Length: 71
Image 1 (cartoon, rainbow, N blue to C red):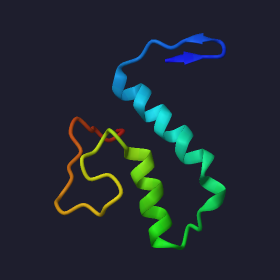
Image 2 (cartoon, rainbow, N blue to C red):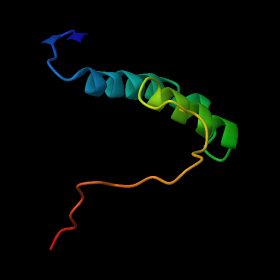
Image 3 (spheres, rainbow, N blue to C red):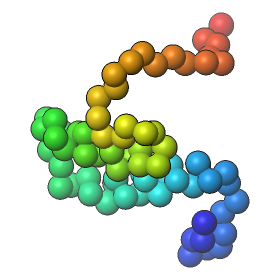
């Protein structure tokens, strides 16, 4: 990824996450947080190229692996 200050070395998935976040934040002021359609649209942009069903409610369970709570 090329930035004004130089290149960024990162895995492609992490670069996609940053691009998606920037695109989402750019549209932030257009959305109303209490409108379901706007929330799903923001989610679709944020997760584009990262999830198969980005922008839709999940149809199954989700687990967290490798998580160990603080002592």
